[in-house]
Length: 146
Image 1 (cartoon, rainbow, N blue to C red):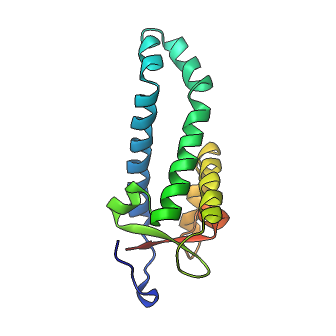
Image 2 (tube, rainbow, N blue to C red):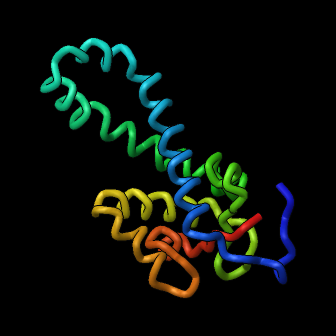
């Protein structure tokens, strides 16, 4: 991934961030479906059992996978698969450089909270100068174009 010089940084649009979000969530959904395929298929004829499975057996693995996925990719690559496709990346708000593992982890956990509370954490990004969502604020990050 080509690095922009700090003088040429440009905030990523909310449209490109939303596009990256959709790609990442589809990827995570496919991974969860592959891992739990046998359980999903065995309950496919009973909608009530399927709902119970989703509420009990899939929630924690899904949250753990999302946190691990976002933490690793943001820390190691500066972008998730969705962000790479959307040509955006995540940087540290103070140094404008690589995000630390801890900041990446905090950002990932903040993202989960944003999703759990009706995506309000994402909406915050529409109302501040840096387009920073709750998880950007939590992880002290910015999302910029590549």
